[in-house]
Length: 186
Image (cartoon, rainbow, N blue to C red; front, side):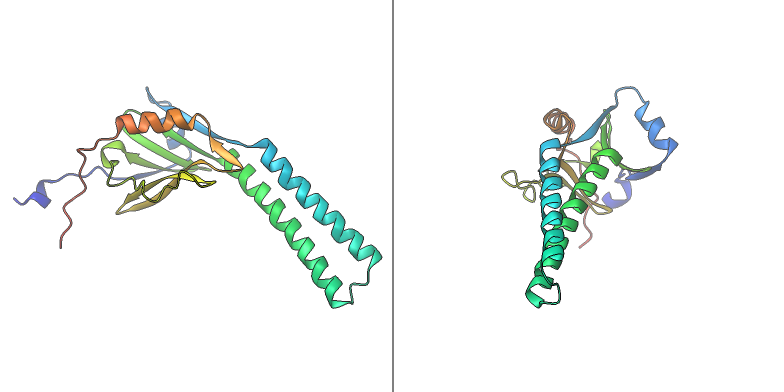
């Protein structure tokens, strides 16, 4: 028997609907919800409102047949759409997504679908901290497995994982640095 034949790797699983609730009801599990940054989202909403008002004033008082006015109008409407789309994206993310941690598994959920990663598969080689940019406006936990390439959002300008410091500390404490991926053939 070769080393590759005796090596057992716990699989990454996908859960749906009620299976997620069952996973959360297991003893020792902790869910971590996302919370949105109210001030950041209000600021974006106001920027969108101001640009929409400026577009309305431009359309009312200026001729949109003039190319400069038409381009300015379209630019203001585009800025409005972009800001309001960002607000909607992050509010929906905060309402639909969460992360869970158990003594043996990490759950990454969005809507009625979740990915469960065994903690025995998470180590310094599979959590690519070199890709995590702590000085940037967005900080993620990059999980890189052969069958999963997932960034777990920790914090950004518009939303954050509730108690992300506690989540990250718990995860790092439970990470198995002796965990191994199957031998790479080649």
